[in-house]
Image (cartoon, rainbow, N blue to C red; front, side, top):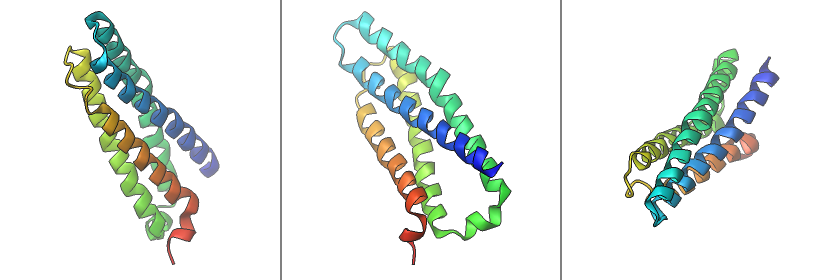
Length: 143
């Protein structure tokens, strides 16, 4: 089951990070669009993508990550790289919620909501990459 949980966790992460990045970019695009109806439509698409894809993928990632952790909690807690990966993942989760809040504000008509979405999206991708570095390089990162 461990390998199945790992595969599902990685798949969910791929869908999650791709979709939350798209939500951030669409939210930013909605704030830059001059035509009000078009901006509203883009913001609605961003919100629907957040609700229908990003949130379920996040929940799947969390579920399978926790399931994998619960199979051998003591082992993971002794691995130094895991603490870095988990910290970076918590930052990604926090940024996910910030981007979702911006998408909700943009969908409710705020044109200011998308202004920082590109920065939040960039930070999300940077920390997602950091989690990958910790997971892939594992033993090379600690003495």
